[in-house]
Length: 111
Length: 117
Image (cartoon, rainbow over all chains, first blue to last red):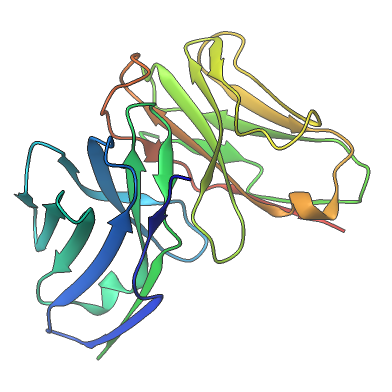
């Protein structure tokens, strides 16, 4: 069936380092992908999105890369800060409107 | 406020009780979604509204789950005869677009944490 999964459940980085969070998806028909950040006790917060006609998109300190050939998505966070500590989810919109989420990666930033 | 709001934030119910969870979407947003998030998992789709019309309820786990959005704004998710497996965070999201296959961003509320004892 359809699935969106993450390669690593936890990631620990030093403050100031760059972080890379990876995600694999299985539905080649998906045309829209989103990264969400979720802090404890809060709802998912939109970070950045990318459409399937793009390979890369940059935001403030974040970059999303999309490799449709291998159905892989990644989120890069530059100069990671303690406030970046959270669970990060990739989500896939397969033309049906509803989002399909992966399990999530917990990012821990060490000061 | 400008964001999606949900109430109550926490709900404890005894097994067999009925509960009602409320969602206030962002003003003007046409689409509204409900998701269920189990501990340590990503959110899972429950149902979708475009204005007052419920266009997809394929994710509702049983006929004990019912959602409505009678005036196309506020939505209520009702769970009848709650079971322990219903314990989860229930998230509401809204988006501006009214097209089912749209690529519009969904904005989430803080969720309602339901614990069924």
